[in-house]
Length: 191
Image 1 (spheres, rainbow, N blue to C red):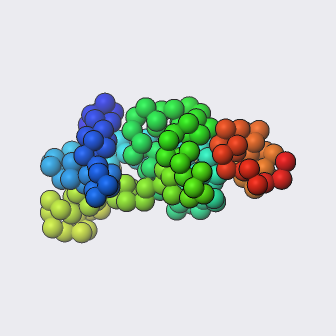
Image 2: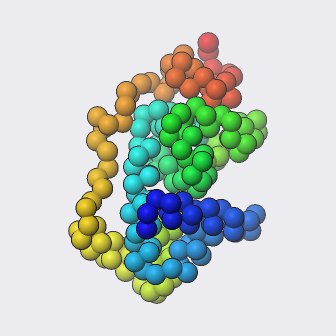
């Protein structure tokens, strides 16, 4: 599966998502309609784009939007960026502060909710689809381990590749680096 097809899968799931069927469920449905090989290839692309936004500036955006952001929550945020689709993913990857323009982020900031963008279930769509096809909840991980060793592995970026680290709890630093998101989320923080 090339990157174009990967984003096509994401867009198909986004189109099928409803109030009663969240994106991750629609994604599982879409993936489960494909072959096991397609699901593994999807997971390879997913990890590639997921790892590409493993950066301090993106984490800072997650920290503002989520009212804090642990390691696990940052995984969910990056999955959520993917769930927003290719256009928003690319915007956020180029400039995390651009998320201040996303309607869900704006609505969540106004309502003082911290769930915008985060999508934990999207991290597990491939394994859930694989389980649906095989009936075995361990089959995906066994197949994934074999798949990874048969092709060139994509390793998670080193901390050195994350860009410049900075203090997410320093309102002035956040305003400097993410001015639009800070305007939405730091209205009560000291100037």
